Amino acid sequence: MPRTETSGHFLERLPWLTALRRHLHAMPELSREEEATSRLVADELRRLGLVPHEHIGGFGIVAQIAGSSEGRSVALRADMDALAIQENTGLAYSSQMPGRMHACGHDGHMAMLLGAAAYLAETRNFAGSIYLIFQPAEERYGGARSMLEDGLLERFPFERIFSVHNWPGLPIGTIAVQDGPVMAGTNEFEAIFTAPGAHGAMPHLSGDPILAGGYLLTGVQQIVSRSIDPLDPAVVTIGSFNAGAAQNIIPKEARLRGTYRAFSLEALDHIRQRLEDAVRAAAVMAGVTAELVVDGPDFPPVVNVQGEASVMRRVAASIVGQSRLPACRPSMAGDDFGMFLTHRPGAYAWIGNGTESPGLHQPDYDFNDDILAIGAELLAGTAEASLRSMQS
Ligand SMILES: [Zn+2]
Ligand SMILES: [Zn+2]
Image (cartoon, rainbow, N blue to C red; front, top):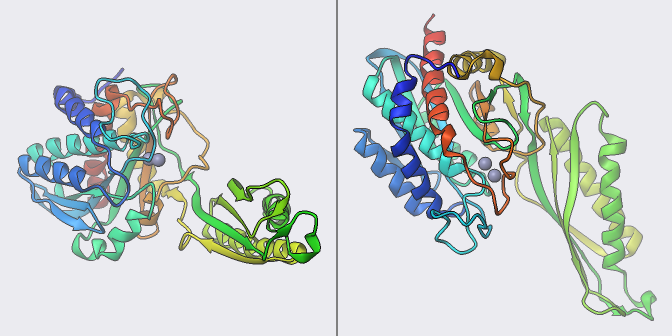
């Protein structure tokens, strides 16, 4: 594999990064609960001679690395939170927390960003400022939005932003940086149908929440197939339908939970409106009352800006070689990094976690430590290259 002149800096740090990643892996914390994780990151930053600004948008941290001279500014972002999943890898450094697991590799992303920080803080071979952003609550609650609402852009005025995610299915030693859409915009919802309830032999005495749920279940599938441009990717999935306990009783309530995803805020907004219509229509048909609870504003899609994506791709090519930059199709999975991209231009790369890797959010998933040096070098190199591209 071709490596840059600076690759040695990162390979040298691989044992440290691996130990750090495994330490983080053993102590997963859920979204908005990343207290110990945050403390550990802050301590590592201090050890590198940096000043961590803590408690930004929850347990978020930002640290600035000043270059050798004045100039422009860029940010690098890593996510911090884990998932409510029981780990089943059998690894020596498995989660010590029952029912919690770093099953999305955010432990690895934090280690990569600390690896980039170590190199950048030592070399400072750039003009301007590089901001390191450790973002909490990516999986739930929109930590990116919380950091922005906490004055992130005002306090740390970065002009470009970059991030990475490990990607199971892509070979080790590959990096994918797409132009345009990378990850879908998302939201989650719950529909609640209620009625007085009745004996199953006397349906005329109550509306039927289960029937309403049935209508909604099939109705939402028509949102995408009948009201979205077939050339615009979108999906609505109901993953949970709870109602009733007895075979001969019409229950008082049915609850359906789901998610919708698309690649533009307009399409997301359209789905949300059609979802409201479908819930209302299902309630009328089944003679029940309905409530739709949507999880706040839609999360925007991750859409790479072409200029920034090409900066990142050039750096990626210098690390792994031009032939190891696969062209990938976007994913309907989401990442709230898209929130940052609605404020500043930037790009987001997928780093191959191996073709044999179990998928993200699986109990047998594990981040591959072999890619720590690649990720750290990609982040650091992209920050330097982006600063250079703005200077010229
Ligand atoms: Zn995830
Ligand atoms: Zn993730």
